[in-house]
Length: 110
Image (cartoon, rainbow, N blue to C red; front, side, top):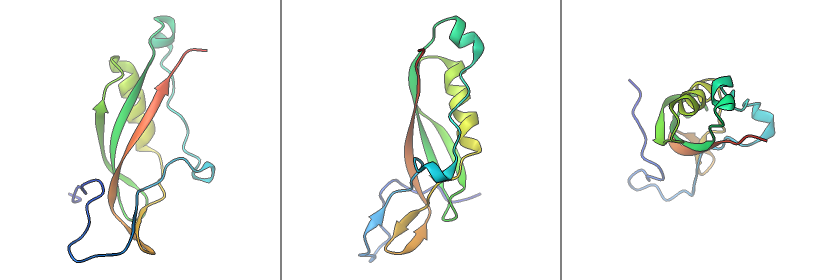
């Protein structure tokens, strides 16, 4: 099992600047979560915040709901979406490293 990194944790004796993993760059082609049809019909909205552990190669290796939207269907849709994402890995100096990031996913009806 992959080691779960602590957000913003510095390795002992490592003074290089730390940059968190990125997920918003357009070139990453991370599709938004699918809005469940039943949630749309029931007018369910909210923001899910996911905690995602990202490997040094940008793969999500572990993820969970950090803060629920208040609707299980929306939370599940967010979890499913992030499973297929690719992240810009965190960096310590110029070196890619494993780290974690909080990812907000908003569900709003137009």
